[in-house]
Length: 127
Length: 161
Image (cartoon, rainbow over all chains, first blue to last red):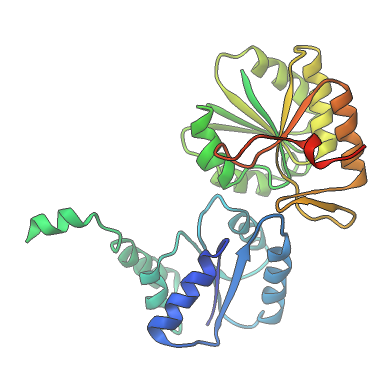
């Protein structure tokens, strides 16, 4: 499995920095950032799709409206890869230790990771 | 009412969906772009990128005249987005028949082979610059601004004749 973490500005680099902090350095993670005025992410995505075409690829995008997500959605038409938008650290941590995914397992992992965003005062009132 | 006429090669994306929609209280987003209008898959993707409560229309340049007339007279707020300077000039020429007070918002034009860097998110080709001066001579205001919180900068500040 190859993990491609994308997003706007420093976000994806920051996320990977956090992951390295938590689980150590990995060589199966790529980072693609959309920066102002720069179309470079398209070439980067094309390169990865081509270079790792026999691998199981999983792309993460930060927002569904973003240009990278839109570009990847177009690519889904004639390429096979997993695409998740709105990722968080919990989701990445889980998937980094899941060598194989299925549509069902992915949906379960997403559902679990979604639970990580919580208004904490509500938690406190449960105590 | 057309609240904003925008040029942005990414067409509809987060900046419009997340910020301009609320700021201008938009009911409708109209994308005028042949490539998108003639490709159902691109249209579907643009639909994913729009806010739920807003209507999206994706139309070809040759079909835009009636839509523009309709939006001009409508009470609902809309934004028109084109993907390049040629298309926005075409739309401007249609709007000129209705109004003498037209502004263009440049949201972003990214690197192309013959373009030069104006700002981090704006690259213009010699043809773009030619069109910009034609539009300015027509009395049209052209401002660079990605999102509402940005300063609205007259494009003339970046260009020399």
